[in-house]
Length: 388
Ligand SMILES: Nc1nc2c(ncn2[C@@H]2O[C@H](COP(=O)(O)OP(=O)(O)OP(=O)(O)O)[C@@H](O)[C@H]2O)c(=O)[nH]1
Ligand SMILES: [Zn+2]
Image (tube, rainbow, N blue to C red):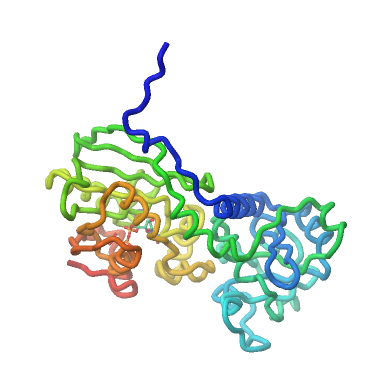
């Protein structure tokens, strides 16, 4: 029996990326998974390693492992916006550089418990703290910014228990995974540039019978990003393109809270009408915060915050997406110039900054549906979205 060889081997071959980059991606991806399991990890880079665990995931066992590896009692690391809600007192000293993006709080013994940590981390899980147990601000340890970044890569709330690690063989016996702070900070760019085509097939769509899907995977082994090609966009001078961030609720369920469903279908329909286009379906649910955190943000929006303040209250930025992913995919598809379907000026600037020539913007606004009116109004007023 002969095994058929695909005619386009670029669809299956995965050119090697430099060893150091591959090892860095592996180390960071593993460490983020450990945090999701409630296991502590070691962050190296400062004068002494920091042992950290995710506040929303750590249980009694993880806290005991952390204590065994720590030189001092742990502190709680939070993003500044969340810390302002938990401990509204001035910082002890002005903070500078990367550490300005984190706040450290001393944890009174009563709060070093999984349920208390979860409620300190998560504004949607808040419960009253016992009288006199308000956490107090302390100096931020080196590596705090990388610790918060690692939790975010694991799509966890940026809230961690952290302590300087003990030196010596005792630490090795703990068998904790270790990762470099610099590798964590470089991860989004390293992962984006490591994307490679891993599969390709024709998938005729109701609105676009001549459609293909090309799947791209990063060397970290994480979730794939998809390109939906209508016709042959690579043969056009500057084809229609859309960078569409995944929205489980809007794209799949038809949620009325956002405009993603109509934007997705509308983009494909428009590309079919023009005869060609490329829609990049990016695994960046919730503007990069993940579905679980988007649901938390929705709960905060139901309590009165808008979409931007809800992200910040959870400790995230307003928009955590990285569009280098999209530029890498376009380049591998042989598309260097595009007309971008979007209302978001940040997307135009971000794609251009990654080396794709953005020849113009094609407006992509849909009428409010009675539920998403406030959301669309916030996008225009606070994100600068263009309405036409
Ligand atoms: N965090 C958060 N994400 C949301 C919310 N509503 C929708 N999203 C996410 O926002 C993303 C949709 O953004 P896009 O449509 O790609 O882009 P955009 O920034 O709105 O710009 P356009 O190109 O004009 O649509 C999806 O990942 C949604 O899951 C929300 O209230 N909070
Ligand atoms: Zn949506």
